[in-house]
Image 1: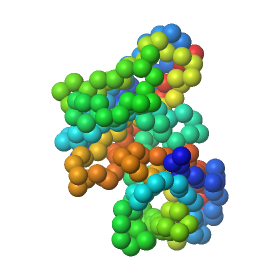
Image 2 (image 1 turned 60 degrees about the horizontal axis):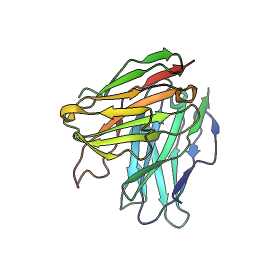
Image 3 (image 1 turned 120 degrees about the horizontal axis):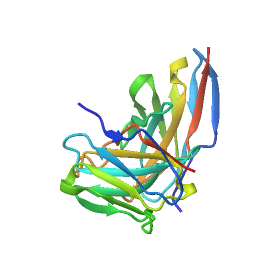
Image 4 (image 1 turned 180 degrees about the horizontal axis):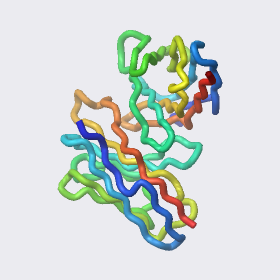
Length: 111
Length: 117
């Protein structure tokens, strides 16, 4: 069965430190990978996507993500976290015309 | 560009009552989605429209949920009768269609938070 896993329900990072939010997937064929962010009482906002090409993709708000085919992972990263990055982050994978969502990771950045 | 508009933002109803949500997608976006997001979970696709045709409604509980997209623009999602487990945020999203934009990102509205008591 096709699936997306975000193994951490919550990630805590001190402001200014690097952050990583993990995502792994299990799909057939070539995946198309996405990250979205959701702030409280708001809809989801697109951050970045990987379709093909360079394994490191850059997105909005200084975020980037690294596609690793052998590990079937697409981890979200940022070199220096801001308090305003605190939100819920969702990984999604498109395969066979279906968009499969992870359960989300709550990111908390402490001053 | 104006974003995806949804109304109402909040709705509280009793079980067995009916409720309707409205969505106006971004101008020119032919693909429209309705998602259900239960607290602590990722979004669950209820229905996907391409213009005014249904592409995927495999996870829509058709005995109580219905959706329409007349004229291929605005859309309405209805629940009748509501159950306690329908308490969730209902998100509308839109995206550009076409082969080249197959992987274009979804643009979400702010959602409608439904509480069924």
